[in-house]
Image 1: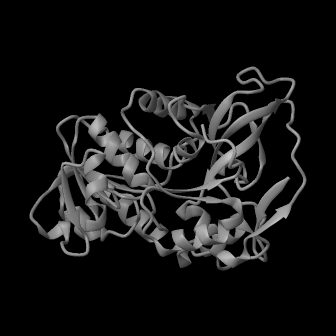
Image 2: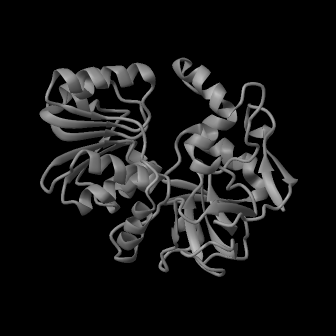
Length: 329
């Protein structure tokens, strides 16, 4: 089968389209024929090994010291089940599915991927194309996890920093679904997008510092890890929640100290592997409550160009890789 591989860390040019061995499902696994995957910021960081210095040793142990342990990137996918192991009960051949695969060594940049039936795998929403469904498992689950941790309530004032990215676009829609008043922080070129997703107010971060406008919020959700922690704390209400999707160890310690010494709640880390979260998101999608935002689609052969675009840091929503261009529904 064809797969995008990388044998060394570096620029997008380290990515190669090669022939690799097709996997065979174990007794408790399904074999998914991949139709679409994405280029996330996480894929970019893993490829380039661009991590904070405080993460360096941990990341080297996890990803590989001299070269990548797992040669195939790709954190999420959508496709069709081609085969199932003899013990599989939850899925059958021909099921259209979407999944997060980061918990299983990544590997979505390939024509086939094996996944355990009890992994982060669910039936694809019928109203979504494979391209759209592939963009849900990482951004959608991350946004859902953090907003739930904040115990978001109707009528609260929620600010989402990085509102036009993958996590941000889902966070805007989910916050509105829960009845919050949403302030979106992004560039002015993305105002129309975030307003269409439900944002009540928009702030251009290149022209205005939201922490200096005198407003305070029940929830501040930094989806990109670029906001000032100290400034955000001053803009957070006394019993508000600060959510940080990209927290380095130094910030994590400050967040922990804040939670201990004040009534403010801070949440970092990432979502636990709960398949029911994918099912919940699928139900919201089918009900027309949320949707994926797709910036650009690239064929596998243009993976280098796709990564270069994501490296710029200004993608709107998601960048999708079409693994099989003949399957788009």
